[in-house]
Length: 303
Image 1 (spheres, one colour):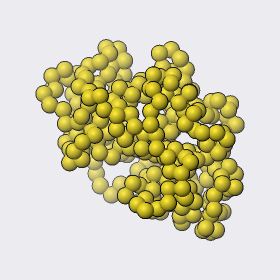
Image 2 (tube, one colour):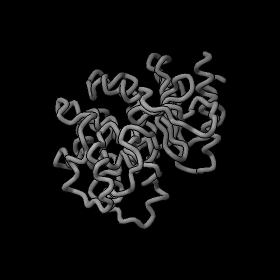
Image 3 (cartoon, helix red, strand yellow):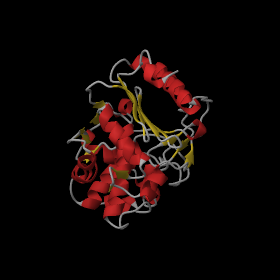
Image 4 (cartoon, rainbow, N blue to C red):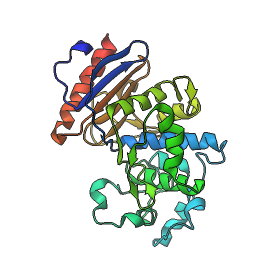
């Protein structure tokens, strides 16, 4: 398959970019959508920026309870011993200690959005922090709240000034649960915006010659920090085998951020290639989108 001769794309937008050759393929609608869990990738980048800005005063080992304890109402007092040991890194890697997946869109329902931080920190913790990986939306929302309370001002302002504005993304919309950015979802961006974020990671934290976040941080983002113990076998390149700080690693070291519904930012680091896919429409296309992206990655790897 020739990349410049894809007859029909399954998603609304597809961009394939090479660090050496520029745009290899582009069919992109002027469409900004909820990028779903790709927002975790952005929150992770923002965490790295905050660490850089504070010269490490805020860091991966920062204890979240020390920052949040006066801002929340913990109804489940049994949680407190474990809460006291949760670090920023545990939020980033989905290892806070939950046995159940929580704060996914279908789970929130009629819950009071202003009390979701109380809900998340009161929900039973069954494991010691840092031990068990369980992907959910809780960690990145708690991280968003932790960063904002540490700063003492709106986290969005920090992100907009030090990330979005510097790479040319103009004032994107990001929803809140209560006073905190959702962090884990509900960030509205287009394919071109995602390509800019992808270039930042591909260039190890620099964008058009300007350092945005440290290369030390970006290398941790795509590290294989936790293995995802699945009860099924996925032979595609986009198999969610390992998790770093906001990024998955699949088969043959394909690194990617993904969001429900067919949203992807894929990194082929060895080839210097980024693939961006957005699906704002038919949710029934998710499987077809993944299959097409798998074929594209295979083609790029064989060229």
